[in-house]
Image 1: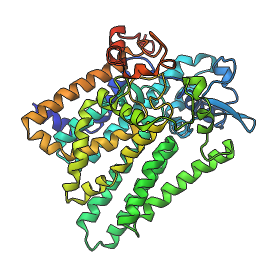
Image 2: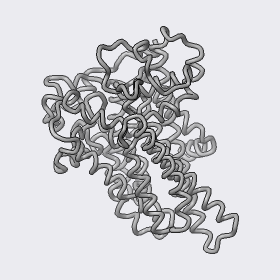
Image 3: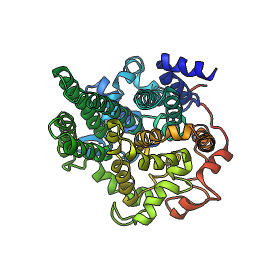
Amino acid sequence: MKTRLINVFDSHKLLIFFTPFLIYMLNGREISSGDPTPTVFVSINALKKGTIFLDDLHDYIAYHGLPYYVSEQKGHLVSNYPIFPGIMAVPIFAPFVWLIDKGEGDLVWKYVSKLSGATYTSLAVLILYLTLRRLIQKEGALVLAGAYALGTALWPIASQSLWQHGPGVFWWSVCFYYLIRFAEDCGCNHTPSQDSQRSFTRYLFYAGAAAGFATLCRTVNGIGAVALSLALLCHYPRRSWSFIAPAVFLTASLIAYNVLIFDSWKGGDVVLHSLHWELDRVEGGSWSTPLWVGFPGQLISPSRGLLIFSPFLIFALWGMVAIWKKADVRWRMIAWTIPIPIIMLLVFGKYAVWWGGNSHYGPRYQIEAYPFLMLYLAAVWPQIRNSRTWMTLFLVLLCFSVFTQWVGAFCYPGGWAVEPTALSVDKGRLWDWSYNQILTCLRSGIKWPYLLL
């Protein structure tokens, strides 16, 4: 029965998209904050008015004073967050925008925002499965794709609204898929033919474009694009330019937009970084957190730790070591990426608001690191699968991870960020094990599915 089920999913790969997609939609509500709001209206205005400006935002949202997520630049209201996820969502918004009048759309926009997040996150799961399928047996690929979909913050955050993260992990999954295809051809062709040379160029171009698009979705993804460019330049100096060219072009396009609109290559981050005190009661510069506080906080804070909310990922740390023993060029390609999630964790560990703010469940900043970690975990899947002890431990940790994400998808918010003392006032609550976000949300119960009823 188990083998038959695995074969059904492997033969009908769209099931690997639709299964998490339906689960993501099952809670019947959008889980969001202010961050995705301008992205939603970028999609709407692109369709209705052919512009990315948000000058008519007041027609949709009543506010006194500009919300933190927009600012006035060059005579227009613009999003302080990257606009590319909104552009990506245009095909999903299109039928709804053309059918819904402005005054009737509040719940509809929430629904379509959730639909967009769920779509790109589910596509990321499918593409990661296709990548894993080229590295390990289909049983392991299916288990790890399921763990990725339901055992990480992809479920309670990335899939629940038009955050930057769903489109971001989608592009990283695409990038890895084509890097593995490139590595396969390199490993099989010691004296490549002209057709193989074209394949090398094509796969690297697609991977580089995907890394560039990931950067357009979220600026921090540029760390990965730069690191991969350097790694490929060192190991494939002639072929690497097929990757570097599209990645550089797309990154340069982002910088040009930021300079044109915000007069700074940092774009809207300049505005957001000036609001640390107003939003989170944080003093000092944007990179003022001691690493000995922020770095472990990213991993083991009881209310923000990656290894607390998704403890099965502890096996990825084993994979980061074991992967170097593999001679296969595909695994060596993945090994070169190991500095990327480490640098991301260090960057966010130094960030003034290392916990990611008050309006989400669990670890959010680290979501783009998940595709990397899943590939490292895949490196030790055969050892896990062949050991009863390791497999039992893995399944226990995975079940806890899935339960934890279910709590976020169905029970968040639970008042943890504001009770008994607002998190913006008492940051020590990030280390309170007796009153953490998981338990608080669980005790608060399942929330009303307002999009379904």
